[in-house]
Amino acid sequence: MANNNEQNSRRNFIKIATVGSAAFGLAPVSQVFGSVDSTSNQLIVPENKIAESKGKSVMGLRCEPLKTVRIGIIGLGMRGSGAVHRLIQVEGTEIVAISDLVQKNVTEANKQITDAGLKAAVEFSGEEDWKKICERDDIDLIYQCTPWLLHTPIAVYAMKHGKHAACEVPSAVTFQECWDLVNTAEETQRHFMMLENCCYDFFELNTLNMARNGVFGDIYHAEGAYIHDLRWLKFMKEGGYHNMWRLEYSKIHTGNPYPTHGLGPLAQIMGINRGDRFDYLTSVSSNQFGMSLYAKEKFGENSPEYLQTYKLGDMNTTIVHSLKGKTIMIQHDTTSPRPYSRIHRISGTKGMAVKWPLEQIALEPNAHEFLKKEDLDELIKKYEHPLAKQIGEKAKKVGGHGGMDFIMDYRLIYCLRNGLPLDQDVYDAAAWCSIVPLSEKSVMNRGNSIDVPDFTRGAWEKAEPWPIVTIE
Ligand SMILES: NC(=O)c1ccc[n+]([C@@H]2O[C@H](COP(=O)([O-])OP(=O)(O)OC[C@H]3O[C@@H](n4cnc5c(N)ncnc54)[C@H](O)[C@@H]3O)[C@@H](O)[C@H]2O)c1
Image (spheres, rainbow, N blue to C red):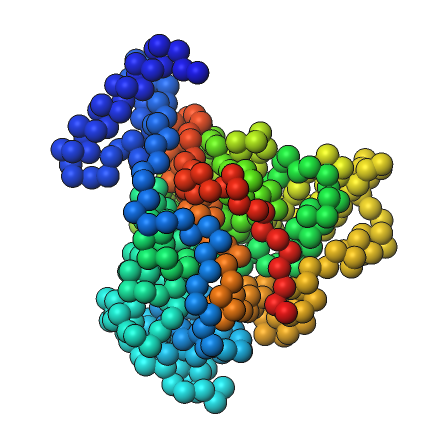
């Protein structure tokens, strides 16, 4: 219950927000982020109002089975070229059209397709040619691997033109985009899947299976991360990110811009959006040191790279609290000299598991110590996930982050061909991606807590946690 002061300041804030948004013709500010009360210096969190859906819920959505999934791929850079390599090896697919601003990428992607003995895809290379691909009537799925700011606009346009949409991470970077994805999927009754490949990595699938079988008891806390030193790639002028889009984003945004690799598998294990949901979060960032230091060493003290301001703090730590009292800690650091880690730590009433720096599990009655190697191996074998059993070997041969990318693609196509609900739906994408804008707002307000809305509009209460799925 809010006290009177809180209620008054809340009402005032909503009034200001409404006037502001009407004046500027924008979405209500209250939907976008909280504001700081000038007298108390406290963050006023907007009321967590959920707009009425213009369609109907897509929780558990099943669509017409597709004999062959006809695909348009947009974005053929580092990630998209790998997607072509994998998708041509998934049975029941046809790549109909491809697009990238760089003609060489398009040509090379088509060479991969024709070298595999398949029909060449129709090529596009204009800035807005993705619209032409979405408008075609010989495509079922738009699969995109473009820079972050294009994700939601392309996905929304694709769904509005009757296509299912699959999109790289993070699928949305603003609060409004999270809602745009949800609203459009509900209106069009099309599938939207964020391509969170880490949900299909072997230890993540394994611990999911263990969790569903009660090995850890009730899981009440988890920790994930994206800790990956990308300074060299961010500053690479040729052959790196197209037009250095990731560096550009670091100049103007803080918080956690890339939360889903660590968060996705944990949210699935903990039944987020299916039996529980995110309630609020708090987020803090260290200042930025790594980019400037790197730029100074590499380009010199007078270089524009060194003189530039980068807003993205090196280490962001966000803690999300669920409605049922569980916590998830998520970190992001792509600018420090550290080994790669997504942590993947799960803590339950009967034990715990962790993936980085070493895969280890500790269980009651002796959870003071990690299991010995032979006991760990036995447990891992016992709870091997069916997807790993059925497609793991082929996935390792095809490649893509050790095989997880192929398992993801295979399962996506399998679901579309069999008219099944997808493993990650638009509500997952929205909730997981909402950490991007909400963490930034919390960081900018001294770590004050901020509400995470219920993107499922109440459907989380009845939805069942993601089951142990197969491809048979
Ligand atoms: N899931 C993962 O493990 C993983 C790994 C790497 C990257 N990613 C994600 O994949 C996406 C792409 O990353 P990347 O590393 O391939 O970057 P990239 O810069 O190498 O590729 C992006 C491509 O999009 C193209 N592009 C830009 N605007 C376009 C437009 N209007 N129409 C068509 N093509 C356009 C560019 O020409 C470029 O080739 C990002 O969202 C990134 O976060 C995910």
